[in-house]
Structure formats: C-alpha cells, structure tokens
Image (tube, rainbow, N blue to C red; front, side, top):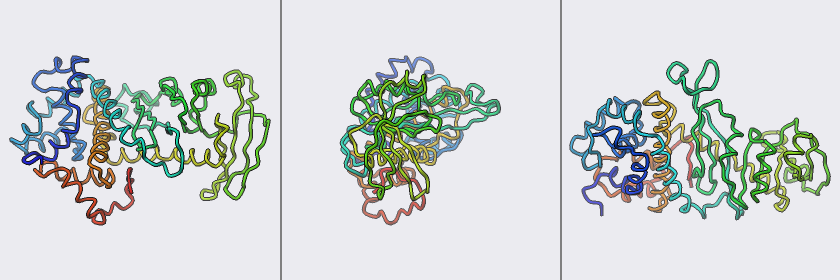
Length: 389
C-alpha cells in the first residue's frame, strides 16, 4: 500500500485535486503567473505549515534540498523565494479561501456524531474572533489603531469536532458584531457568543430564523422581570427569569421576551448572567452550553501555537490572506485524515509526527498508527490538544 510514495504525497492524496483545479479556473488563477501554478504554491505553503518554516528563504532551502523528490511530491514549478513571493502576491487569495471551505464541507460530516461532553442533540456553534497584531509600517492596509495594524479571524466553530463552519479574515477595525450579518442562521441550532455580539436587532434576526442564541448579559442592559422559575441553588444556579427589554431602542429592536439565567461560578468566584431566547432547556443546560464557548478560545490559541499565522511571508493583503487560508486548509486536512484513518491521536501529535516524516517512504497509516500504540511517548506537557482523548 502506497509503496514508494512519500508521506507528504500520501497526505496530499486526501485532497480533492479536481475540485481545486475547478476553483483555480473560476478565478483564472494560473494565467497570472506562468511556470509556478496555484497547486505548486499550495503544496509549498502546506509544506511550510507542516514543517514550521519561518521564511521564504527557509522554504526554498528545505525544498531544494530534497532534489528529485519534488516531482514526486507533485511540485512542477521551480522553487525559489522570488517565484513563491510572486505567487503569494499574484494568485487570488479567494482560490484558497474557497478550497478551505470545500475541505470544511468534507470534514464536518465526519465529526457530526462527536460528543460535546453532555447529552445534547442540536447543532452547537461558538462565535468569536481573534486579533493577529501586525507592524503598522509593513502592513498599512490592515487598519486597526493609530499605532498598530492587525487582522481579525472571525470564526463560527462547530463544537462537534471543532471544525470552523464559517470563517472570515478582515482588518482589525471591523467590530465583531458585524459578522452576524454574514452568518446564515440554521433553524434549531444554538449559537453561543460573548457580550461583544449583543445587538438586539441582529439577535432578533436569529430568533426569527428559529435559531437559538446564548450570550452574556451586559450591565447596562435595562430589563424588567416578568416571571421567575424555581432553581436548585446547589448546582450554582441563582435565578431563572423571563424578562423584557425596557429601553426604547432595545425593545423596538427585540420586542419579544427573553430568558435571563444567573449562575455562580464557584471555581472562579464570579456571578454570570446569560441571555437566551430558548425557554425549553433546563437552566443548568444553558449554563453548560455557554461554558462550551471556551472551545473557540482554545481553537484560536491552538492554531496560533501550531500553525504559521502570526508571522507572514509577505506584507500585502493578498499574501496574508493566502497564508491564513492555506493554514486553515492544512488544519482541516489533518482533521479529515485523522477521521478517515480512524486515529485516536490528537491533532498535535499527528502534526508533530508529520513534521519529521514527510519525506519518508512509509505508508502513512503505519506511520500515524504508531502514535496510538506508543501515545505515552509523546508527552505534550501543557500543549493545547484539540481532539485529545
């Protein structure tokens, strides 16, 4: 099985190459830079992600050192810093954004039956963003503050599998709440988000679409209690109330009743107040749903720690977006491989093994199954392990 093929080549065989070519044709990608195709660029950048390359010079040196193996890796163009830099500038970043979305559509069904830690049947999503700081003099297009540039990664994370169902890369000055306008609500699904997304007009659109939201309440939100339900205070619950908004603007934007749940977090010694439009679930379940929002924070920390999205190989908007979307593609690809090969190892362990075995001619299943057999050999310390056991 796969005799004579490198691990890198076997890994890339899980990608839908025909679909990638159709996307390239859609944006007329390969006409802009002849001799170094979009596929050559994707493979080079994916190699950089998998082996933690720090610069274009680093990528060039490592790939050229492999000599004749490049052809068998699928690379047809000549590898050089200039050709890769030109490709990052010229090839439309939307090619890689669309390809990442395609991979996401493949990965999500593979994880549809994943447990979220407690009995819950509905789709569950966590919405948040992370800011990637940039140098103002090098990235003047990435507007954020007067003394700093940045890009934001807005993510709607499917908590069954930690696969991003929706992802947008914007400049740092875009307010988080505006992303709600771009999300197509899924009826019956639950959307968990923090206080930055409280905009009652937008939340009401979720409500009208038969979707549910769970968010933290702000102190300055004016509400009037209409009804109180009994709660078991030994669970941490303090109150479960039906409320209406009393400020004119808020009440006009969201004219129906809301549910306010107060919960005391003994572990962190703080009182939390949640707002939701769901009146059917037990109050404690609503609190548990909000706790799951932490998964999107772990996702951001994980990809910043294990993927190359904090330091960039180019300074243009196209280059930055290209690198981020290819990094997302690599993340989702490894998640697909993990499921299709039925591996129990975490993504962290798989990435670590791949980083040192890409050019070995060993069946990829045998290479990665050894992690499962010897998992105690890979002490990850305080690493953030998505898909951990």
